[in-house]
Image (cartoon, rainbow, N blue to C red; front, side, top):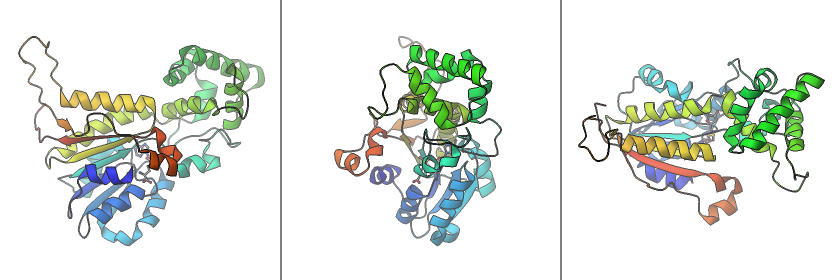
Length: 309
Ligand SMILES: C[S@@+](CC[C@H](N)C(=O)[O-])C[C@H]1O[C@@H](n2cnc3c(N)ncnc32)[C@H](O)[C@@H]1O
């Protein structure tokens, strides 16, 4: 939904924008083009390979773009380092990119016969191998229930533990996916979308601490936007992300915690106003062009210039 992203960021020439998840730089390029000739972009990604690709793709924009290999929850440090005081717009495009997905040796896909990895930042210690081979059955269940399928998640957790106890550690994403698929009743190869996909996503979310990152990322983004009353656009790709972003943005729009029947005594001021009330979905033409966009939702909000909480 690139056009809607740019429209909802309300890009101005000479504005300062942050792409918190620059990936291969597709959205970043559009932001730089729309903010020409003087707009500035801070490009963040926790994945060194993604950042290198973005650097190449955006080389023609020279000094207008700066790159930081950080988690987006570290935005305040990035802003201090880049000496940015006012931010006019922030984009968060969650999850992983197609480049990461298709890079077989990173282990994000069930086709991967390489080691169980799935780290976005390969400097971090925790990998999928650790989650799958070292977590207790209960811990595994807690991770896998993100799929929303509690009973099935229990069975999958139990199957993983009995496999590693009987046959030694699980070594590849493909092997893990086979085990998961074999646990799920009624699935036969080639019939439906591989049911392991949603379990692999739940494990990826754990390995990369994606839920806390997203919650924190929204907070630091909204804080950074206050002085310029800037815009926030978030693209989410999975059910748990759609819900989390919707709830957090609503809470920031209505932060008052006083009982509804009583006058407000908590003094909490709204930080944002939602500019799309119901998250937007891609239209049919876009889904036809790019079937993967089907699950995308666009959330957008404007900071209200609130200085106290
Ligand atoms: C869906 S892709 C972004 C694609 C990008 N918008 C584009 O146009 O190419 C998500 C990117 O965000 C990065 N990422 C995910 N979580 C992150 C986090 N917490 N901090 C920084 N980068 C993150 C991933 O490494 C990946 O490159």
